Image (cartoon, rainbow, N blue to C red; front, side, top):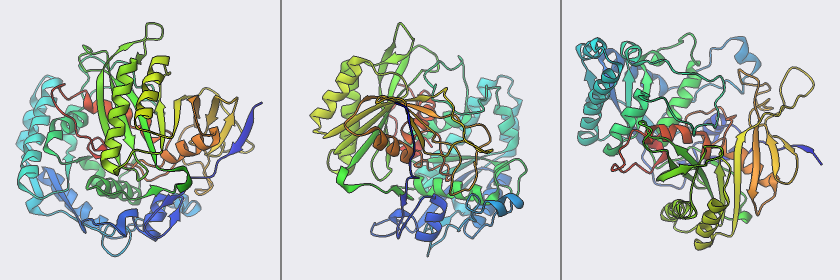
Length: 478
């Protein structure tokens, strides 16, 4: 029998309290690791860009040290919880760190070097030249200056010179297992991969986005929330918030399994594991090349490949936490094959994991409607049977008193392949994992972090050679 229920909004834990909203929680209670943990009191920010870019960055960092009020007019007045002011990144409250950027942490790029790249006829060569230009400056900062994270500011002229026509989807999807176009180019992915071995996370921003009150962009307070939260997490090991957990259920390890293609298409697909512990720390593991299912042309793993990948993931968890998890939640966007399940189960048993839940997460074609002009509430769960469920991870949000999206929300389908927990508990945990995106402090993300960022991670890994060892920290892929 089909049943409908509303799941409560997952709560987040901060230094001195709980809240459903990351922004309000940080402003009122302070970042989670502010109390009881040894951490730095300053985030040192390096910068690479033209002279005008670095001036814009310096002015923006200075603005982010103080409060920034939302100037959204009537919309901000009607929905104050959706548009809270930025609390400022300084000591004493909120983030409780000082965001610092100075001339000796900046590496200027000559305007003539940008013009040289613009003059190159072939797009691929423009990309190569631009990546190497930024790499040289990032390398200097990483090796000769004490910095926590490096901001690469891309001037508008270079941004336009590197732009290539790409299909843009109105809604993000989980269908990231298909082939990218041959010769696919992306400056952000390429420069992050090129600089990865230097050991400093990067934050890439357009020069345009550093200006105040830019038409067509997010308001300045929202930009500051997202920019500073990302920098704080990347400067790690730090976490701004964590999910409120039920200690009676034991420690939780959430793992997302995904695949990506090589840029030259020589490798069909390579497996990828994203691991998140109960604190929200993320780790990335690259697996081995896999084959395609002859029926649906989707990638799959053999029993041994599944065992090896999950064993490595659990070992990484053990190294970080000092013990294996009591519970394992495994998310996959493609269907599970019997041999994959066998391999995953063997790996979990070898680590003495008490309970396991294997869940396929995909976009659903079903739609629900409610009276009025707004879509169903976020957290609406429709259970079709014990195995199949539909969850609205995006929708009307009571805390915001509105639906904050631009398009009609599409629910996600949860297909439970194997479980030791109830479907409601599995859905509650998945809803919580949608709030663990450090790039976006608006808490109505569509996908759990285990899968929502998997495609972006794969798109960076495909720029690495097989002989290159990728960084394990999730901060290098954000």
